[in-house]
Length: 269
Image 1 (cartoon, rainbow, N blue to C red):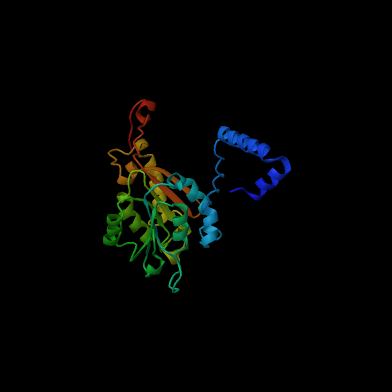
Image 2: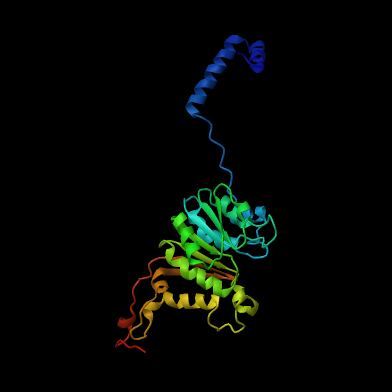
């Protein structure tokens, strides 16, 4: 069917010349090939998604750029992310903002939330929800059994040091060798009302754990006679610490050492 433009063109230059122009147009289109597809729409950053879903991981805190730097290599992977703490406290119908942020940032991942208060109304699609205590070993093991591709754990739960240490002790060994474990709001390590200690050098706090893990990165350099490396010594390859946030990378920590070659004689404490 002739178009309105085509009919007007025929009236102006004649049907023969119009046909010639159409043949020329077809030859040009054949040589040029199909039109280039439009450029893909830029993907939203984690900070933009945090703003969209109104999670305090950006605004109250400045966590999202650090998370994006640490997790961007997983953006299109299929895996499970577990976040301890769904948010909203006891307010009915609230919480789940950061779970939605993770869901949108990782389009192929399963996002699991755990909270001591029932937040099952947040679940849907790739978002799964469990109710219970973050220190319950049976519950944490069940989550791992239900999601054997668990690769990332984010502790945004009670922020109480005792609970943080308990969850880490249970979950970190269950992560794969390329797993990532994050702890948020480590400022509570210095707040007695949250199980912390005023003395920054105090033991038993979440930041004391982090300091021990940093020492463990260098266990091959220790000069302690008969020292036996711990599980975390040999299974942590990097620790990234920012204001109120720590990210721990799991892997084989066995690079070796030039310790004994540097000294004239091996010595120990």
